[in-house]
Image (cartoon, rainbow, N blue to C red; front, top):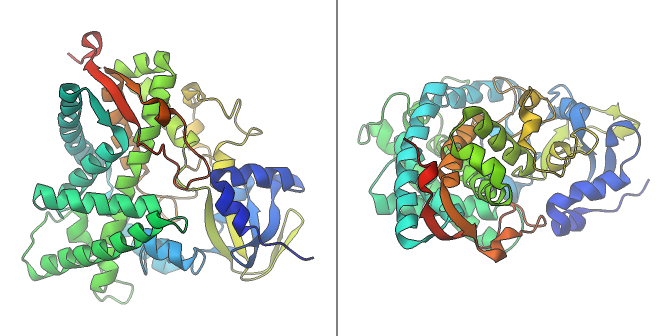
Length: 416
């Protein structure tokens, strides 16, 4: 069977590619065989698709993500590109630096800096959520990770990490900015690792800078400086990406004033449900990439060894057959154990401890729990042009970064 290459369709449609797939999927499980990036590919969705994609007997990550994307967003030799024992061994580094007590420390740092940022917005009557969150999250995570520096230096580093996140996905001027930012970030992170190893920088023993600098591979040798630096950035860079969730949270707070009022009270249940629904509606990537380790048949689709296997992340999180009123923002769907569903995958699926699920989900939620109530306690309106955004852009974001106008304190909603 001849297969047309649908890469141009993916590039043109972005997150809407999942709708294109749904209309063409055949058989149970809505699997689709097509050609992407020049290779024969199986795209899967839903609960059973998640189970397949994270089945390490059949799907691997090595050589799966296109090189231009992987080198920009992950870096060479990153944990995301490893399998089996090598992956499990490297993953332990990330589990070590994302323990709950360490997540809480980062959230406290963000809360203090975010409060100062909101004070500035109130004084000036305006603020922009996305770049402000990039700056606050970036400065806080650098200090928390033991990679802090002078404020102006940390601001530049945060902007570079933000450029990497913003431009990794598609060929464009943003991608070129992301590539140059990645080079600068690699050089800086490598210098941090060298300074730690030489004793010229002395971060706490449990910080990411210290853990990565002293990490060893399966062979017992210290990780190469470049690899340790890449993994340090893979702690910092995903934290910056949470700024995109913060931007979409602001959009939903304005669109749902009743939910905003509930979040403004600081009710932990209301805030938790709201933040989870933001993540469901705004997954960071449309697809995740793997590669088949062996021939197998999936729902009538023949998969050869070496074929690409893609998981439709956006389509799974917004599947109308799996989520009631899937296109409606409804935090109450998380009143039960929806967050534990295996087909809730805004930051990947499978096991956090042994698989490729992001260990930073706790950090993402901790930062959102900080940002959402504080935004809800202010009065503001969003610039009309920022109320809409294109799902064709990856990662999606309003072009203006969610500009807030007429920012002022709502005295009745301030914490006591």
